[in-house]
View 1: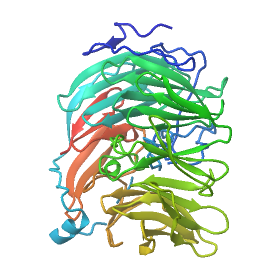
View 2 (view 1 turned 180 degrees about the vertical axis):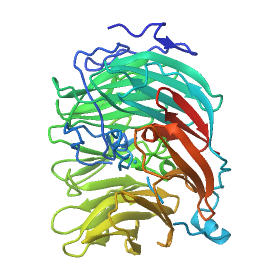
View 3 (view 1 turned 30 degrees about the horizontal axis):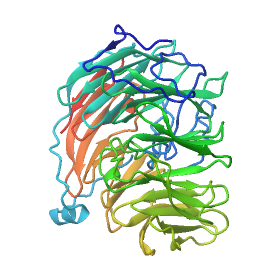
Length: 517
Protein backbone atom coordinates (compact mmCIF):
# COMPACT_ATOMS: atom_id res chain seq x y z
CA UNK A 1 0.00 0.00 0.00
CA UNK A 2 1.22 3.47 -0.80
CA UNK A 3 2.25 5.90 1.89
CA UNK A 4 -0.51 8.03 3.43
CA UNK A 5 -1.40 10.96 1.19
CA UNK A 6 -1.79 14.66 1.81
CA UNK A 7 -5.39 14.14 2.93
CA UNK A 8 -4.22 11.83 5.69
CA UNK A 9 -1.36 13.91 7.09
CA UNK A 10 -1.48 17.57 7.99
CA UNK A 11 2.15 18.67 8.19
CA UNK A 12 4.30 21.74 8.77
CA UNK A 13 7.57 20.44 7.40
CA UNK A 14 8.61 18.79 4.18
CA UNK A 15 8.76 15.02 4.05
CA UNK A 16 12.25 13.58 4.46
CA UNK A 17 13.61 11.18 1.92
CA UNK A 18 14.64 7.77 3.16
CA UNK A 19 16.97 5.26 1.58
CA UNK A 20 15.63 1.82 0.78
CA UNK A 21 16.52 -0.71 3.49
CA UNK A 22 16.94 -4.45 3.30
CA UNK A 23 14.08 -6.67 2.19
CA UNK A 24 12.82 -7.25 5.75
CA UNK A 25 12.15 -3.59 6.37
CA UNK A 26 9.32 -1.73 4.63
CA UNK A 27 9.79 1.98 3.98
CA UNK A 28 7.00 4.49 3.74
CA UNK A 29 4.27 1.92 3.26
CA UNK A 30 0.76 2.30 4.54
CA UNK A 31 -1.10 0.32 7.15
CA UNK A 32 -0.86 -3.07 5.45
CA UNK A 33 2.10 -5.43 5.90
CA UNK A 34 3.30 -8.48 4.12
CA UNK A 35 3.37 -9.96 7.61
CA UNK A 36 1.01 -8.53 10.24
CA UNK A 37 2.57 -7.86 13.57
CA UNK A 38 2.15 -6.92 17.19
CA UNK A 39 3.31 -5.30 20.38
CA UNK A 40 5.97 -4.73 22.83
CA UNK A 41 6.21 -5.00 26.55
CA UNK A 42 8.48 -4.20 29.42
CA UNK A 43 11.67 -5.63 30.36
CA UNK A 44 13.84 -3.15 30.97
CA UNK A 45 11.46 -2.97 29.57
CA UNK A 46 11.36 -2.99 28.14
CA UNK A 47 11.95 -0.61 26.30
CA UNK A 48 11.90 0.22 25.09
CA UNK A 49 12.66 0.69 28.02
CA UNK A 50 15.02 -0.74 27.55
CA UNK A 51 18.00 -3.88 30.47
CA UNK A 52 17.61 -7.52 29.88
CA UNK A 53 14.79 -9.52 31.29
CA UNK A 54 13.09 -12.62 30.02
CA UNK A 55 11.16 -11.77 26.84
CA UNK A 56 7.90 -13.50 27.69
CA UNK A 57 5.20 -12.06 29.85
CA UNK A 58 1.61 -13.18 30.35
CA UNK A 59 -0.71 -10.18 30.39
CA UNK A 60 -4.24 -10.29 31.81
CA UNK A 61 -5.69 -11.38 28.46
CA UNK A 62 -3.43 -14.40 28.30
CA UNK A 63 -1.56 -13.60 25.06
CA UNK A 64 2.23 -13.37 25.30
CA UNK A 65 3.87 -10.10 24.44
CA UNK A 66 7.46 -9.43 23.54
CA UNK A 67 9.86 -7.33 25.51
CA UNK A 68 11.49 -4.01 24.82
CA UNK A 69 13.87 -3.33 27.67
CA UNK A 70 13.40 0.15 29.09
CA UNK A 71 9.86 0.43 28.03
CA UNK A 72 6.67 0.26 29.97
CA UNK A 73 4.77 -2.94 30.38
CA UNK A 74 1.60 -3.81 28.47
CA UNK A 75 -0.88 -0.98 28.50
CA UNK A 76 -3.24 -1.24 31.49
CA UNK A 77 -6.86 -2.16 31.06
CA UNK A 78 -9.57 0.25 32.20
CA UNK A 79 -9.43 -0.98 35.78
CA UNK A 80 -5.82 -2.15 35.87
CA UNK A 81 -3.31 0.22 37.49
CA UNK A 82 -0.26 1.17 35.50
CA UNK A 83 2.37 -1.38 36.39
CA UNK A 84 6.08 -1.62 36.96
CA UNK A 85 9.04 -1.85 34.66
CA UNK A 86 12.36 -0.14 34.37
CA UNK A 87 15.81 0.05 32.94
CA UNK A 88 17.10 1.41 29.71
CA UNK A 89 17.15 -0.22 26.37
CA UNK A 90 16.71 3.11 25.01
CA UNK A 91 16.00 0.64 27.09
CA UNK A 92 9.79 2.31 34.00
CA UNK A 93 6.54 5.08 39.81
CA UNK A 94 5.94 5.48 42.84
CA UNK A 95 5.62 7.37 45.91
CA UNK A 96 3.40 8.26 48.52
CA UNK A 97 1.86 10.47 55.35
CA UNK A 98 4.37 13.29 54.76
CA UNK A 99 7.53 14.14 56.67
CA UNK A 100 8.98 17.58 56.06
CA UNK A 101 12.69 18.25 55.94
CA UNK A 102 14.69 21.40 56.43
CA UNK A 103 16.79 23.28 53.91
CA UNK A 104 19.95 21.49 54.95
CA UNK A 105 18.36 18.17 54.08
CA UNK A 106 17.41 19.45 50.65
CA UNK A 107 21.00 20.42 49.97
CA UNK A 108 22.22 17.01 51.08
CA UNK A 109 19.67 15.24 48.88
CA UNK A 110 20.65 16.72 45.56
CA UNK A 111 22.61 19.99 45.44
CA UNK A 112 22.18 22.04 42.30
CA UNK A 113 18.73 20.76 41.31
CA UNK A 114 16.40 23.73 41.59
CA UNK A 115 12.85 23.49 42.88
CA UNK A 116 10.29 23.67 40.09
CA UNK A 117 7.78 26.51 40.39
CA UNK A 118 4.70 24.36 40.94
CA UNK A 119 1.28 26.01 40.53
CA UNK A 120 -2.34 24.78 40.47
CA UNK A 121 -2.87 22.46 37.54
CA UNK A 122 -4.80 24.03 34.68
CA UNK A 123 -5.89 22.89 31.26
CA UNK A 124 -4.14 25.03 28.64
CA UNK A 125 -5.09 23.40 25.33
CA UNK A 126 -7.35 20.75 23.84
CA UNK A 127 -6.86 18.85 20.57
CA UNK A 128 -9.07 16.82 18.27
CA UNK A 129 -7.93 13.23 17.65
CA UNK A 130 -6.94 12.06 14.17
CA UNK A 131 -9.01 8.91 14.81
CA UNK A 132 -11.94 8.99 17.29
CA UNK A 133 -11.07 8.11 20.89
CA UNK A 134 -13.25 5.30 22.24
CA UNK A 135 -12.85 1.98 24.00
CA UNK A 136 -9.90 0.90 21.85
CA UNK A 137 -6.24 1.60 22.65
CA UNK A 138 -5.09 5.19 23.13
CA UNK A 139 -2.05 6.74 24.79
CA UNK A 140 0.23 9.77 25.10
CA UNK A 141 4.01 10.18 25.06
CA UNK A 142 6.20 13.22 25.76
CA UNK A 143 9.81 13.75 24.77
CA UNK A 144 11.28 17.18 25.46
CA UNK A 145 8.78 19.78 24.22
CA UNK A 146 6.97 17.37 21.86
CA UNK A 147 3.81 15.50 22.88
CA UNK A 148 2.34 12.63 20.86
CA UNK A 149 -1.28 11.53 21.22
CA UNK A 150 -2.45 8.26 19.65
CA UNK A 151 -5.89 6.69 19.32
CA UNK A 152 -7.42 3.74 17.48
CA UNK A 153 -10.94 2.75 16.48
CA UNK A 154 -12.71 -0.65 16.65
CA UNK A 155 -11.46 -1.46 13.15
CA UNK A 156 -7.86 -1.08 14.29
CA UNK A 157 -7.22 2.15 12.40
CA UNK A 158 -4.51 4.20 14.15
CA UNK A 159 -4.22 7.98 14.27
CA UNK A 160 -1.51 10.16 15.80
CA UNK A 161 -1.40 13.87 16.64
CA UNK A 162 1.90 15.63 17.40
CA UNK A 163 1.84 18.80 19.52
CA UNK A 164 4.46 21.38 20.50
CA UNK A 165 4.06 21.75 24.28
CA UNK A 166 5.60 25.24 24.26
CA UNK A 167 3.47 26.88 21.56
CA UNK A 168 0.57 24.47 22.25
CA UNK A 169 0.02 24.08 18.53
CA UNK A 170 -0.44 20.96 16.43
CA UNK A 171 2.74 20.09 14.52
CA UNK A 172 1.04 17.43 12.40
CA UNK A 173 -1.85 14.97 12.41
CA UNK A 174 -1.79 11.54 10.74
CA UNK A 175 -5.13 9.74 10.40
CA UNK A 176 -3.64 6.75 8.59
CA UNK A 177 -0.71 5.69 10.78
CA UNK A 178 -1.52 1.99 10.42
CA UNK A 179 -4.09 -0.75 10.87
CA UNK A 180 -3.88 -3.71 13.25
CA UNK A 181 -6.22 -5.97 15.19
CA UNK A 182 -5.06 -4.27 18.39
CA UNK A 183 -2.46 -1.59 19.12
CA UNK A 184 -0.35 -2.02 22.21
CA UNK A 185 2.10 0.79 23.00
CA UNK A 186 4.44 3.47 21.72
CA UNK A 187 7.68 5.20 22.61
CA UNK A 188 8.95 8.62 21.57
CA UNK A 189 12.50 9.06 20.26
CA UNK A 190 14.28 12.08 18.76
CA UNK A 191 13.79 10.62 15.28
CA UNK A 192 10.05 10.17 15.80
CA UNK A 193 7.45 7.84 17.27
CA UNK A 194 7.79 4.05 17.42
CA UNK A 195 4.43 2.26 17.67
CA UNK A 196 3.80 -1.42 18.31
CA UNK A 197 0.72 -3.51 17.74
CA UNK A 198 -0.29 -6.59 19.68
CA UNK A 199 0.50 -10.05 18.37
CA UNK A 200 -1.67 -11.11 15.45
CA UNK A 201 -3.31 -14.47 16.13
CA UNK A 202 -2.68 -15.71 12.60
CA UNK A 203 1.03 -14.91 12.43
CA UNK A 204 2.26 -14.68 16.01
CA UNK A 205 4.01 -11.47 14.99
CA UNK A 206 3.57 -7.78 15.73
CA UNK A 207 3.85 -4.58 13.75
CA UNK A 208 6.52 -2.04 14.55
CA UNK A 209 6.01 1.30 12.78
CA UNK A 210 8.18 4.41 12.96
CA UNK A 211 6.63 7.81 12.19
CA UNK A 212 8.97 10.74 11.49
CA UNK A 213 9.09 13.53 14.07
CA UNK A 214 9.05 16.23 11.39
CA UNK A 215 5.93 15.38 9.41
CA UNK A 216 4.36 12.21 10.84
CA UNK A 217 4.89 10.14 7.71
CA UNK A 218 5.91 6.54 8.14
CA UNK A 219 9.68 6.16 7.87
CA UNK A 220 9.63 2.36 7.86
CA UNK A 221 8.00 -0.69 9.41
CA UNK A 222 9.02 -4.20 10.31
CA UNK A 223 7.44 -7.40 11.68
CA UNK A 224 8.51 -8.33 15.21
CA UNK A 225 8.38 -11.84 16.68
CA UNK A 226 6.83 -12.68 20.02
CA UNK A 227 10.18 -13.21 21.75
CA UNK A 228 12.20 -10.56 19.89
CA UNK A 229 13.68 -7.66 21.85
CA UNK A 230 14.34 -4.11 20.69
CA UNK A 231 16.89 -1.66 22.13
CA UNK A 232 17.46 1.98 21.16
CA UNK A 233 20.61 4.04 20.76
CA UNK A 234 21.05 7.59 19.46
CA UNK A 235 20.44 6.70 15.81
CA UNK A 236 20.48 2.89 15.78
CA UNK A 237 18.10 0.20 16.96
CA UNK A 238 19.43 -3.19 18.06
CA UNK A 239 16.99 -5.97 17.22
CA UNK A 240 17.41 -9.44 18.68
CA UNK A 241 15.53 -11.46 16.04
CA UNK A 242 14.92 -14.83 17.65
CA UNK A 243 12.78 -16.07 14.76
CA UNK A 244 15.55 -15.76 12.19
CA UNK A 245 18.32 -16.08 14.81
CA UNK A 246 19.98 -12.81 13.89
CA UNK A 247 21.33 -9.82 15.78
CA UNK A 248 20.76 -6.61 13.79
CA UNK A 249 21.73 -2.96 14.02
CA UNK A 250 19.06 -0.94 12.16
CA UNK A 251 19.23 2.72 11.18
CA UNK A 252 16.41 4.44 13.07
CA UNK A 253 15.66 6.91 10.26
CA UNK A 254 15.45 4.38 7.43
CA UNK A 255 15.32 0.86 8.85
CA UNK A 256 18.37 0.00 6.79
CA UNK A 257 20.65 -2.70 8.21
CA UNK A 258 23.89 -1.15 9.45
CA UNK A 259 25.33 -4.41 10.73
CA UNK A 260 24.16 -7.94 11.39
CA UNK A 261 25.39 -11.33 12.49
CA UNK A 262 24.05 -14.79 13.15
CA UNK A 263 22.71 -15.29 16.67
CA UNK A 264 21.75 -18.95 17.15
CA UNK A 265 21.91 -18.94 20.97
CA UNK A 266 19.27 -16.35 21.96
CA UNK A 267 21.55 -13.52 23.00
CA UNK A 268 20.54 -11.11 25.76
CA UNK A 269 21.27 -7.44 25.07
CA UNK A 270 21.78 -4.85 27.84
CA UNK A 271 22.16 -1.20 26.82
CA UNK A 272 24.35 1.10 28.91
CA UNK A 273 22.71 3.94 30.84
CA UNK A 274 24.28 6.99 32.47
CA UNK A 275 23.37 9.37 35.30
CA UNK A 276 21.96 11.78 32.69
CA UNK A 277 19.48 9.15 31.52
CA UNK A 278 18.03 8.95 35.03
CA UNK A 279 17.89 12.69 35.71
CA UNK A 280 14.83 13.60 33.64
CA UNK A 281 11.11 12.82 33.51
CA UNK A 282 10.19 9.16 33.84
CA UNK A 283 7.09 7.01 33.64
CA UNK A 284 5.30 5.23 36.44
CA UNK A 285 7.78 2.35 36.41
CA UNK A 286 10.86 4.50 35.88
CA UNK A 287 11.25 4.44 32.09
CA UNK A 288 12.99 7.68 31.06
CA UNK A 289 10.90 9.80 28.70
CA UNK A 290 13.91 11.74 27.41
CA UNK A 291 17.07 9.68 27.97
CA UNK A 292 20.38 11.05 26.73
CA UNK A 293 20.83 8.14 24.34
CA UNK A 294 23.97 9.58 22.76
CA UNK A 295 26.12 9.87 25.90
CA UNK A 296 27.05 6.16 26.00
CA UNK A 297 26.13 4.33 22.82
CA UNK A 298 27.26 0.88 23.94
CA UNK A 299 25.54 -2.35 24.77
CA UNK A 300 26.57 -5.58 26.45
CA UNK A 301 25.83 -8.88 24.74
CA UNK A 302 25.35 -11.91 26.99
CA UNK A 303 25.68 -15.26 25.22
CA UNK A 304 24.45 -18.76 26.06
CA UNK A 305 28.03 -19.84 26.87
CA UNK A 306 28.02 -17.19 29.65
CA UNK A 307 30.47 -14.93 27.83
CA UNK A 308 29.90 -11.18 27.59
CA UNK A 309 30.98 -8.62 25.00
CA UNK A 310 30.92 -4.82 25.10
CA UNK A 311 29.85 -3.49 21.71
CA UNK A 312 29.12 -0.25 19.88
CA UNK A 313 25.43 0.10 19.01
CA UNK A 314 26.04 1.97 15.76
CA UNK A 315 28.71 -0.28 14.28
CA UNK A 316 28.41 -3.54 16.21
CA UNK A 317 32.14 -3.39 16.87
CA UNK A 318 33.32 -5.43 19.86
CA UNK A 319 35.62 -3.58 22.28
CA UNK A 320 35.87 -6.11 25.13
CA UNK A 321 35.04 -9.78 25.63
CA UNK A 322 35.16 -12.00 28.72
CA UNK A 323 34.08 -15.59 29.41
CA UNK A 324 32.03 -16.77 32.41
CA UNK A 325 30.18 -13.54 33.19
CA UNK A 326 26.45 -14.32 33.25
CA UNK A 327 23.77 -16.55 31.83
CA UNK A 328 21.17 -15.13 29.47
CA UNK A 329 18.55 -15.46 32.24
CA UNK A 330 20.53 -13.61 34.93
CA UNK A 331 19.30 -10.14 35.83
CA UNK A 332 21.85 -7.66 34.46
CA UNK A 333 22.14 -3.87 34.40
CA UNK A 334 24.78 -1.81 32.60
CA UNK A 335 25.17 1.66 34.06
CA UNK A 336 27.81 4.36 34.45
CA UNK A 337 30.60 2.25 32.98
CA UNK A 338 29.82 -0.94 34.91
CA UNK A 339 27.96 -4.18 34.32
CA UNK A 340 26.04 -5.48 37.33
CA UNK A 341 25.13 -9.16 37.39
CA UNK A 342 22.78 -10.86 39.82
CA UNK A 343 24.01 -14.43 39.84
CA UNK A 344 21.25 -17.02 39.61
CA UNK A 345 21.40 -20.45 41.17
CA UNK A 346 21.99 -21.52 44.74
CA UNK A 347 24.33 -18.63 45.55
CA UNK A 348 22.58 -15.27 45.33
CA UNK A 349 25.32 -12.71 44.71
CA UNK A 350 25.77 -9.44 42.86
CA UNK A 351 28.94 -8.78 40.88
CA UNK A 352 30.22 -5.61 39.18
CA UNK A 353 32.47 -5.54 36.10
CA UNK A 354 34.26 -2.48 34.72
CA UNK A 355 33.16 -2.15 31.09
CA UNK A 356 36.47 -0.64 30.00
CA UNK A 357 38.41 -3.81 30.62
CA UNK A 358 35.96 -6.50 31.72
CA UNK A 359 38.53 -7.63 34.26
CA UNK A 360 37.96 -9.52 37.47
CA UNK A 361 34.60 -8.66 39.07
CA UNK A 362 33.98 -7.08 42.45
CA UNK A 363 31.49 -8.87 44.71
CA UNK A 364 29.05 -6.18 45.82
CA UNK A 365 26.68 -8.29 47.92
CA UNK A 366 26.03 -11.87 49.00
CA UNK A 367 22.54 -12.77 50.18
CA UNK A 368 21.99 -15.10 53.12
CA UNK A 369 20.79 -18.66 52.43
CA UNK A 370 17.16 -18.91 51.33
CA UNK A 371 17.05 -15.23 50.34
CA UNK A 372 16.51 -13.99 46.78
CA UNK A 373 17.66 -10.82 45.03
CA UNK A 374 15.82 -8.77 42.41
CA UNK A 375 15.22 -5.32 40.90
CA UNK A 376 18.81 -4.16 40.37
CA UNK A 377 18.55 -0.38 40.06
CA UNK A 378 21.20 2.38 39.92
CA UNK A 379 20.29 4.78 42.74
CA UNK A 380 22.73 7.68 42.78
CA UNK A 381 26.37 8.22 42.02
CA UNK A 382 28.25 4.94 42.44
CA UNK A 383 25.41 3.17 44.23
CA UNK A 384 23.26 0.20 43.36
CA UNK A 385 19.93 -0.60 45.01
CA UNK A 386 17.97 -3.85 44.93
CA UNK A 387 15.41 -5.92 46.80
CA UNK A 388 16.41 -8.81 49.07
CA UNK A 389 13.55 -11.13 49.94
CA UNK A 390 13.67 -13.63 52.78
CA UNK A 391 10.08 -13.93 53.93
CA UNK A 392 9.63 -10.16 53.53
CA UNK A 393 11.19 -7.49 51.32
CA UNK A 394 14.12 -5.29 52.25
CA UNK A 395 15.52 -2.57 50.01
CA UNK A 396 19.31 -2.44 50.15
CA UNK A 397 21.84 0.06 48.79
CA UNK A 398 25.47 -0.97 48.22
CA UNK A 399 28.62 0.76 47.04
CA UNK A 400 28.62 0.08 43.29
CA UNK A 401 32.41 0.28 43.01
CA UNK A 402 33.89 -1.36 46.12
CA UNK A 403 30.90 -3.33 47.39
CA UNK A 404 29.56 -3.26 50.92
CA UNK A 405 26.17 -2.33 52.30
CA UNK A 406 25.37 1.39 52.67
CA UNK A 407 21.86 1.03 54.08
CA UNK A 408 18.85 -1.28 54.19
CA UNK A 409 15.18 -0.61 54.86
CA UNK A 410 12.12 -2.84 55.36
CA UNK A 411 9.50 -2.14 52.68
CA UNK A 412 6.91 -4.89 52.18
CA UNK A 413 5.68 -5.98 48.76
CA UNK A 414 8.06 -3.91 46.63
CA UNK A 415 7.06 -3.64 42.99
CA UNK A 416 9.71 -1.31 41.61
CA UNK A 417 12.57 1.02 42.50
CA UNK A 418 12.99 4.42 40.84
CA UNK A 419 16.04 6.68 41.38
CA UNK A 420 15.52 10.41 41.98
CA UNK A 421 18.98 11.93 42.21
CA UNK A 422 20.64 10.35 45.24
CA UNK A 423 17.24 9.33 46.66
CA UNK A 424 15.02 6.39 45.80
CA UNK A 425 11.30 5.96 45.18
CA UNK A 426 10.09 2.56 46.36
CA UNK A 427 6.82 1.46 44.79
CA UNK A 428 4.30 -0.98 46.21
CA UNK A 429 0.85 -1.82 44.88
CA UNK A 430 -0.86 0.73 47.17
CA UNK A 431 1.67 3.36 48.18
CA UNK A 432 5.14 4.66 47.57
CA UNK A 433 7.99 5.80 49.77
CA UNK A 434 10.83 8.22 49.18
CA UNK A 435 14.08 7.08 50.83
CA UNK A 436 16.92 9.58 51.17
CA UNK A 437 20.63 9.14 50.52
CA UNK A 438 21.16 7.78 54.04
CA UNK A 439 18.39 5.20 53.83
CA UNK A 440 15.82 7.13 55.89
CA UNK A 441 12.22 7.35 54.63
CA UNK A 442 11.21 10.97 54.00
CA UNK A 443 7.54 10.31 53.32
CA UNK A 444 5.09 7.59 52.41
CA UNK A 445 1.85 8.42 50.61
CA UNK A 446 -0.94 6.49 48.89
CA UNK A 447 -1.12 6.72 45.14
CA UNK A 448 1.63 7.10 42.57
CA UNK A 449 4.62 9.43 42.33
CA UNK A 450 6.85 9.91 39.30
CA UNK A 451 10.23 11.53 38.71
CA UNK A 452 10.27 14.90 36.99
CA UNK A 453 14.02 15.42 37.33
CA UNK A 454 16.80 14.59 39.78
CA UNK A 455 15.27 16.78 42.50
CA UNK A 456 11.52 17.01 41.83
CA UNK A 457 8.64 14.56 42.02
CA UNK A 458 5.03 14.66 40.78
CA UNK A 459 2.48 12.78 42.93
CA UNK A 460 -0.92 11.41 41.92
CA UNK A 461 -3.48 10.68 44.66
CA UNK A 462 -4.46 7.26 43.26
CA UNK A 463 -3.21 4.58 40.92
CA UNK A 464 -3.30 5.37 37.20
CA UNK A 465 -5.89 3.51 35.13
CA UNK A 466 -7.28 4.09 31.66
CA UNK A 467 -10.82 4.75 32.93
CA UNK A 468 -11.85 8.39 32.74
CA UNK A 469 -11.48 10.04 36.16
CA UNK A 470 -9.74 12.73 38.18
CA UNK A 471 -6.63 12.70 40.35
CA UNK A 472 -5.33 15.14 42.95
CA UNK A 473 -1.81 16.32 42.13
CA UNK A 474 1.05 17.58 44.27
CA UNK A 475 4.61 18.52 43.40
CA UNK A 476 7.57 17.99 45.70
CA UNK A 477 11.09 19.34 45.56
CA UNK A 478 13.17 16.92 47.59
CA UNK A 479 13.57 18.32 51.09
CA UNK A 480 10.69 20.81 50.79
CA UNK A 481 6.99 20.75 51.67
CA UNK A 482 4.66 19.36 49.00
CA UNK A 483 2.88 21.93 46.82
CA UNK A 484 -0.77 20.94 46.41
CA UNK A 485 -1.89 21.55 42.82
CA UNK A 486 -5.57 20.60 42.81
CA UNK A 487 -7.44 18.17 40.55
CA UNK A 488 -6.37 16.82 37.18
CA UNK A 489 -9.93 16.44 35.87
CA UNK A 490 -11.67 14.09 33.47
CA UNK A 491 -8.68 12.31 31.92
CA UNK A 492 -7.55 8.75 31.39
CA UNK A 493 -4.72 8.87 33.98
CA UNK A 494 -3.04 5.74 32.63
CA UNK A 495 -2.80 7.45 29.23
CA UNK A 496 -0.93 10.55 30.44
CA UNK A 497 2.72 11.54 29.97
CA UNK A 498 4.69 14.57 31.18
CA UNK A 499 7.76 16.72 31.16
CA UNK A 500 8.78 19.19 33.89
CA UNK A 501 6.00 21.69 33.11
CA UNK A 502 3.02 20.00 31.44
CA UNK A 503 0.96 16.82 31.36
CA UNK A 504 -0.32 15.41 28.07
CA UNK A 505 -3.44 13.30 28.63
CA UNK A 506 -6.03 11.38 26.67
CA UNK A 507 -9.55 12.43 27.72
CA UNK A 508 -12.84 10.63 27.05
CA UNK A 509 -13.08 11.75 23.43
CA UNK A 510 -10.10 14.06 22.80
CA UNK A 511 -6.64 15.11 24.04
CA UNK A 512 -5.47 17.89 26.37
CA UNK A 513 -2.39 19.62 27.76
CA UNK A 514 -2.31 20.65 31.42
CA UNK A 515 0.24 23.07 32.91
CA UNK A 516 1.49 22.47 36.47
CA UNK A 517 4.87 24.25 36.73
